[in-house]
Amino acid sequence: MKLNKETYKEFKSYPEKVLQFGEGNFLRAFVDWQIDKMNDEAGFNGSVVVVQPLENGLVDMLNDQDGLYTLYLQGMQNGKAVRTHKVMNSISRGINPYRDYEEYLKVGENPELRFIVSNTTEAGIAFEADDKLEGGCQKGYPAKLTALLYRRFKAFNGASDKGLIIIPCELIDRNGEKLKEIVLKYAEVWNLGQEFVNWINEANTFCCSLVDRIVPGYPRDTIEEVRKEIGYDDNLVDVGEIFHLWVIEGPQSVKDELPIDKAGLNIKVVDDMTPYRTRKVRILNGPHTAMVPVAYLYGLETVGESVDHEVIGKYVHEVIYDEIIPTLDLPHDELVEFADAIIERFRNPYVKHYLMSIALNSMSKYKTRDLPSLTEYLKRKGELPKKLVFSIAALIEFYKGKRGDEDIQLSDDEDILELFKNLWTNCDGTSEGLKKVVTGVLGYEKNWGSNLNDVPGLTDKVSGYLEIIEKVGMKEAVKEVL
Image 1 (tube, rainbow, N blue to C red):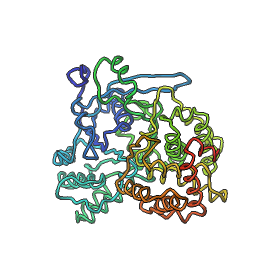
Image 2: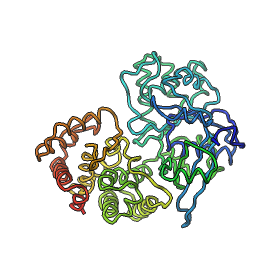
Image 3: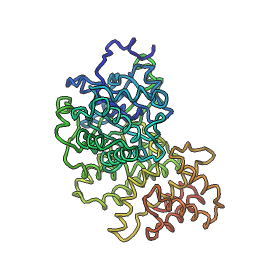
């Protein structure tokens, strides 16, 4: 028996109030779960239209199940292990704009649409110079969004009450402001007129936001047990931890339309999200990104086994407590308490969070999540943080694409993959050759925003660690920094 509206007797239809860019595990376990909860417990009465940001994705599978999927939430709650599951009934349909572009634009003409959310990875909020208004689906998310907003502007003759509340979930600093900036740039480049620009500025609300929930996603190792437990076939089963936090920087009027309190959700609408963001990105996401290449090349597969491992667990602990916490300005006790909670979340006995699921776009993630800690540590201590520097060497080794005899399925932007392919293909394995690889990676300003070879001592340190990893392997190399 397959999960769809015929087999799920409690199926309900709701007005389409939310447009979502991204159909992946995270948004389905985070935003769509919250919409489902607000429908059930607080009378939100709204559904989500999901847009597939890339040409290949899950919307056909989603439509095949009428937007339904099973979400497992599991973890520690009040000191007890808790595990629940429920069918999510908040998605109305999915659209592939590369195939049904006009259908996508028509969503902008819906008078009941109120919110736009997105999670297109850190690399998703970017200006693509080749994207045009005419000629079919644009490549980048901000360009697609601009085209939809322009369709809405024209459909309602610029009505001030038809603007939208736009909340990006991508993990980049000031995500709402950056998204708005790029939308306005397209408005200028595409000559969409001053009236449209005024409507964007005055009728629409772009919120910066911060999201926090660990989502391992599809439980591939235990799917047969899951099928037996739920009693039907579901190709989109999703798994997340119980903990969730959504910090939205915006006007308090957002709460008038989102019945947060009534649904008991941990959503905070605040005037300034900076302290929340810095703490979360540095102490939760930073260790994730620093851990992945080291632990994976060591031979581990998941976050849980990495944190519990005698060697890698020590490495992760020292990254957090010795190198990241000293770079933050919040009270030390508060930071330690938050870090302790993060370690507990990493150890969630139910969550099999695969390292490879975190590895997507690792270069841009390192820039956002770990580089600020590295440079701040250097500034405050006058020396480079060993573990964070070692993680760069491990990242470069990871992008070689091999773990022993096994190929690593690298997933990043084409230019990043091409950069590493060229550098490693032309490397002769000597100290000088490895240093050329490091210099090429650190000098890739398109990713870093600057030339990291200019950071005193960084090139030599990373080169030294990379040489050790190449010579003796990760298991011996990591001991050098512990």
